[in-house]
Image (cartoon, rainbow, N blue to C red):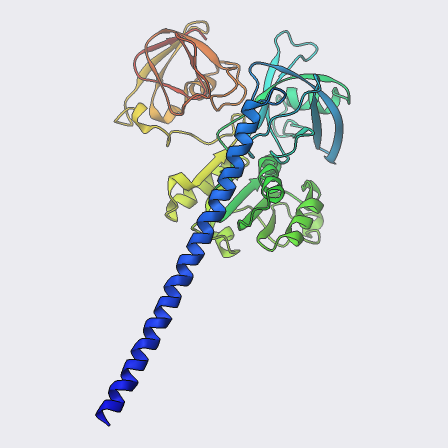
Length: 418
């Protein structure tokens, strides 16, 4: 009987060891497959980069301005149009990173200087036939009678036609999706801020990615959605694509249109209630108030800074002081005199003032700007005296003795030619 017990115990131990070995082997196989898939995807992207940098007819990017022709224009809703652009020289288009934007130099009648503006690319970075930008006509709010409609967006909507030629800089911007990652992806878009998200979603689809994606898309009403049928088809095609709309306006007589299942504005609490995983990469684009709320909410939830990405153009952007804090004063109450010589104004700058561009605007000083992200060079201003620091790295070298005010802060008493 004693020996029988030993034999039974030995058999149990052997079975447990076999079971444990099988589990470990299964995990190792799964991890191995994951690494192979990641390596394959990275190799595919590396091959794309090599192809674009070595061939004569297609470069990764061009320098300066390039002529593009408007191939076609599509109306997405009464206030938003998509513009399909092709190179005027007929050469192939380089790929771009999903989430990047184009910079336009617009020669608008009645305005002496060219107007520089940036618009996000809204289609796959893998498409070679055209570039697409989707532009919202910026109307002045009725509550501010002295305000004017957006100069560039009205020019796109009211003046441009198929066949017109535009000056365009190569795709750029730091708000882009790393296609080699496998982490879940949470996209939060407000209004026309969905355009870079469309580029990300379409690129993931075109490259056959299996990444889990959540899109939270907020507008005032159902009528303001853009490409909703396309997004619906994507959610049907991919089980790993989760689509949720938010509608902030109550609708006529307080009755919401069919399909407006999520009422109010997007919030951190609401996206997590709808299944967004906290261990994800978060990409946010929309009005400044929405992005402020989302970024601060994600911080409170413990999401690391490295996994929170945001993008905006225009004065509505959120403060970028979280980047490169070493260039900011050690004490928040520290003030630095900044003189704008052409405007004959001096301000006391503090860390709460934001960038030099934001500080100038708050003081009523006009400095031309475009991307507000250190890419287009429109806000380049001569530094007469003093030293500046950058809260983000500029996309290209800045000429000596000048600074990009949209990402610059003073490090000492400063005098600018503005």
